[in-house]
Length: 277
Image 1: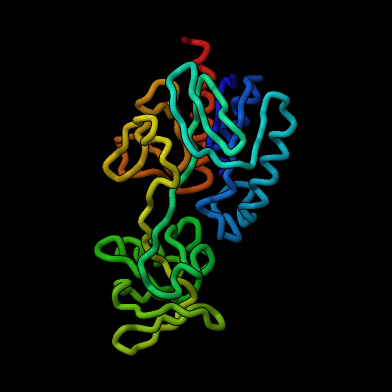
Image 2 (image 1 turned 180 degrees about the vertical axis):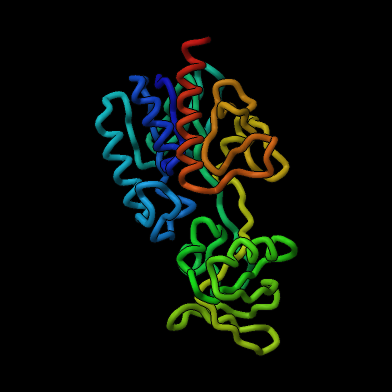
C-alpha cells in the first residue's frame, strides 16, 4: 500500500512526487512516456530553464527523485483505476497497485484543425501559446489560423513582437508546407502566404479516462474540477497540470510553470489531508 500513487510523468506529476517524497511518504509515479509537449524541442517561459528541451527537464527531475528512498518511478502506463479513499487500485501492465490517495496528472491531448501539414509542424513552427512561442518569431511575419475573436486577441498580443500577421480561417488554407525560413500557406483560392510560423487553436481533450472512472466532476470545458488546494470532487483524489482547474476560471494556464505549481499543491494537499484525517 503506497501513501500516494501519482499517474502522469510530466511536470505536474514529477513535482507532486517530489513534494510527497520530501515528506518521506511512499509514492509511486507512473509515467506512460507520452507527453503533451512531446514534440516540443525547446520549452520557454520557465524561470532558470528558458529554452531547455522538455525531455531534458524530465530527465533532470527523474534524477532528483532518485535521491528519495520513498519515491518509486516506473515507466509504464496505467490502464484503469477504481476504489475509494484509503484503498485505490491502479491497474498497470505489471499488476495492480494500491494507494490511500491518488494524484492525477495525465494531461490533455491536442486535436489540431484538419489542415494538411499543420500537425507535422506542431511544437516546432506551429504553436498556440504566444507566451511560450511568440518571442521566437520576433520581427517576423506569422500566420494566425484561428476562428473568430480569439484570432484578433492573439494578433494584438503579438503586435509588439512580430512584424506583421496573416489572419485566416483554417478552412481557407489547403496545405501547410515547410520551406526555407518558415512555412508556406497554400490557400484554397490559389494564393500563397509565406510566414515564419503559425499560431492556431487546438481542441484539448482528456488524455486518460481515470477522472471519469473515479467519478470526478468535469467542468463544461472538459477540465477536471478541483478546488483551490488541488482536490477533485472525489475524496482522496487530487489533480494537477493542464487537465484540471478551478471552476472560477475558464481554463488552466497552460504552461510548465503553472503545471509545476499545481503539482506541488496537489502533492502537499495529499500529505496534509492524510495527517488531518
